[in-house]
Image 1: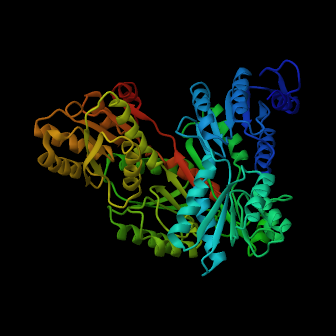
Image 2: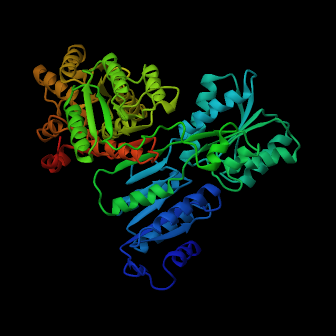
Image 3: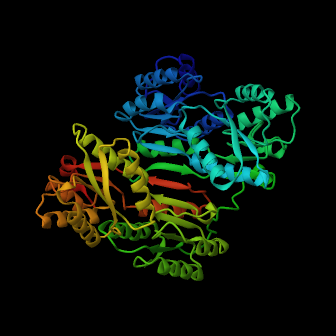
Amino acid sequence: MILGTVLGLIIFGGIGEFSKSQKANSLGQVKYLIGVSYPNLNGPWQLQMNKEIKNEIARHDDTRVIFTDAAQNDEQQVQDIHSLMSYGIDLLIVSVDNASTLTPVISEVYKKIPVIVLGRGVKGYDYTLYIGSDNQLNGNMAAKEAIRLLGNKRGQIIEVEGNKESLQAEERSKGFRETIQRESKHSIIETINGNWLKDRAEDELKNLLKSGVKPDLIYAHNDAMALGAYQALKQLKIEGIKIIGTDGLNEESGGLRLVKQGIIDATYITPTGGTSAVQYAIDILHKVPGLPKKIILRNHEVTKSNVDSYLTEGDNSSIPFIKKKERKIKLGFAQVGSESEWRLANTDSIISAAKEAGVELILKNADYSQKKQMDIIRDFIKQKVDVIAFSPKTEDGWEEVLMEAKNAGIPIILSDREINVEDQTMWTSFIGSDFVEEGRRAGKWLVSDSKLTTTPLHIIEIEGTANSAPAVDRKQGFNEIIQQNSKFQLLQSYSGDFTLDQGKKWMKQALKTYGTEIDVVYAHNDDMALGAIKAIEDYGLKPGVDIKIISIDATIKAFNSLKLGKMNFTVECNPLLGPQLMKAVKDLENGIEIPQKIITAEETFDQKQSKKEFSRRAY
């Protein structure tokens, strides 16, 4: 720890007394001090992250960085973070291996200063910003390539996993295994732990192969372990085994060069996010409003067929960009409807942000019809707009129209809701909420509120539009939590289509069926919750007292119900996506690859908290 800290001071501040008043260089004074905590700095991916952070921080005269390297010791990293806090850092950037050990200390730091979790995640939401890849999707992509490489024969696969306590390893494994089991007859015969290290992966695999195990393919969670697998095979003179890695660095022994040399068959470029971390850190320290909660960077698949383009300047052929134009950028937005207060606020945000950004906006409303929404998108294609954005009514059925947009070279941005398509290059970016986490937060509040209750609690769920992303995910997240305790019993789920009238209708039906047996209503949005409140009052019961009301959106009408004691808890779903959408459009105009997903920052509110927030609520 001491060595790591001193090293950071040598590079960026000199040894001796260190303070924020110390000059960063001849151009200015140190205003901000950032601490960077690594689990280790002996792997190429972490070294690349460190390089990016150093290069970007050098562009900011008033900011210094202290680095620590825990040398793959979890307890040492905890001590490193305490040490950084003692130096008076203004912001912490942290990458973790062991999420279980590091989550508590990061949660504590988050109560005092901003925290950016970089590359490898922690449990929960106690951080300012997460920047990383979609590791489950990464595993899913690797599985599809494994299926292609193995062909029709029933192949045997060895998985070489990273640190067992790392969420990154857990998610990559989940994505890989689920896809292999769902889409093939191949089998994963063994899993070995390489702990992200080349030498360990090599030794563990050699021991396994010597026992007589004969794989057809090896999937390693990073390229270092993939190289270790290759060396183990080479030493044992075993040929014909396919190898898939992940990281895709363009350096000596990096994944790109391993693919080029035929050492491995595929890798997946997973950006470290080092540059973005510093850029967002500066924005956080300068209190820039409207910053996201999560930035999910895009993965790129690299095989023998496209490796040369990545080795030169990077291959952006799968990601469309806007060609420079002298006129204003033209954005076509296909709004799903005006079904709720949330949607009206969302539309207003898009209109005002486009005006402020100087973007020509063509906004059309699909009146909650998927067919009409598709017709609007096709009309945008005919008009040759520069970008198309839309909030999809449902998850499925978009392949044909999005392929038309892709063939026309028009980037697609998903706003608020995600879609389910096989080809992820059909859309460029998603800007919106983490709906699963919203459901989890609703469930966690119920668990906390009822922790002294031992009798069964009977729940009515009023879902959003069937097969829409928020309805599917909010249900999943809520169920994840309540299914952990048998006292929570779901009586019935109804589809309320996100409208007040439908919420009232189905709550009336629930009361007719179950009456006073109902203890809790969980509604997927505020409008349905408000409808349920009216039905409960009409029935002669007190909402918020006789029946607890949990909702999602946190609109001003929900805040009013919280103040009146008719609602108990609401989870924020931020509709003000306009500024982030316009930033993405401008980045595309400037040839900048935008993140695959931009997840908004959101809060939760109970009756007490709503009184403080009510006067500041903008929607």
